[in-house]
Amino acid sequence: MSTTRILTIFAAVLYLVFWLAVIAVSIYLLSLIIRALKKYINSGEVRKEKKIIRKSLGELLKENRLRCKMTQEFVAETLGVSRQAVSKWENGTSDPSTSNLLAIARLYGVSAEELLRSAGDGGKQRKESGARSAENSASEGKES
Image 1: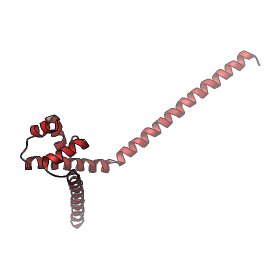
Image 2: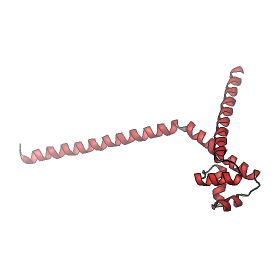
Image 3: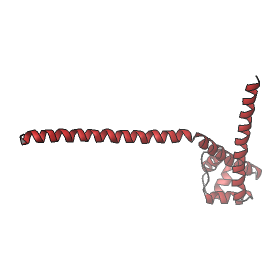
């Protein structure tokens, strides 16, 4: 065999190995994407629970602010944040930082622990009442 023929075969083998490696990497990346999507889909319940807890913390912040007869603007000025930040905390769009949560608790005359515990309990109570109503709906459906 001539050296030209050997080089041609070697180039063809390298070309084939290159494309096999590209295909293998593509399959691996596709499997990683599928795993990530499955994990995200299966975490729906956890995401819903976190959303409920966040909402209940926001509702609790708003409830305490109204109890103390304060405006969002007053709370914002006292804490040194924007009124929009206070609004986001109360709507559950975002959560206050730890230092802001401590300052809010002092401002409202409650402990930060009490705010967080109440928010966590509120989320659990909502989840339990939702589960109970789902069970009741299911049992009513069986009776029909």
